Image (cartoon, rainbow, N blue to C red):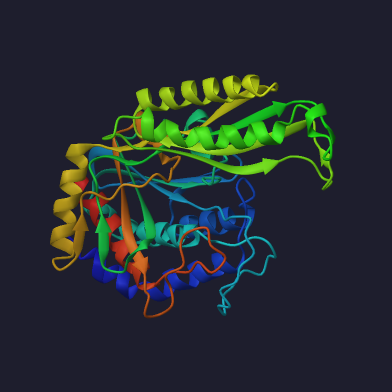
Length: 390
């Protein structure tokens, strides 16, 4: 077995150059035209069979091993976020209001480095590697669209793997958790309707703002009083829109937010209770409420057998590393759509460095990561693919 970690470290200048270029030129979901063009170019330069335009900007490449065997899908996301960068880095975003605030620039560079290494050693692989560079992971449904457009066919994967640079944890840490690792997520919108009027005469109105406040407060009891204590759930009201003038009670108020769980039964429970509370409280306060729900992703549920093998691989590759088998987050990931169809494992690579000032959280204007994690992640992913196709 080649030493993919050592090779990834020797390829660090290549990986870093790509990552910083992507970081300077971020593109939002389904708009990753430049990024996808570079990805396709680099893959074609290796001599790989490349397909483009899947889910608008997705790219897929195939590495055929020297011997027959299973198909391993490796997924890397490419999109940036609508956030104005405040890192002050020399390679900061050149696009106002858009930045790579979640590490997907690193993921794309890692994917191309993995492709380069696995292609070099393709004759030693017993099976096929399917490299998937996905658009629009950030809540826009990129993975679901790729699945709908056939990314899991021709050839059909037998297993799937993805990773995330993880600024919640320091460089050197690894999170490889069996079972649910990231939450199912959905969003909701509530429209509370009353009757507006002058702020000096509230008794002549049916105030949707007061009703909304009561609904928000009551929502906090769902997790604490309806969800079993050993289950996990989150309900967050994140936006309130009501009125414009200081002395006018509006006729309507709109609440928006997100809800997240691991278990389908709990997911259904949250929706049921949220609807009853919103409608019931609004009625009690002489208003009406309508609530709409949209599903974003199912949970990321790691296959126990695949995960156990990856834990063993990680221990051999990083003998001194902290390997956390309990890392779970209520954050979500649309890789879950691929993993619903193909068993897989989604793991985390610690990427923060407080000493270097690289510890801002994901989706923060000052987000950046310790670039040493790039080689670590590329070496890990290449080794995982090679081990499963050995």
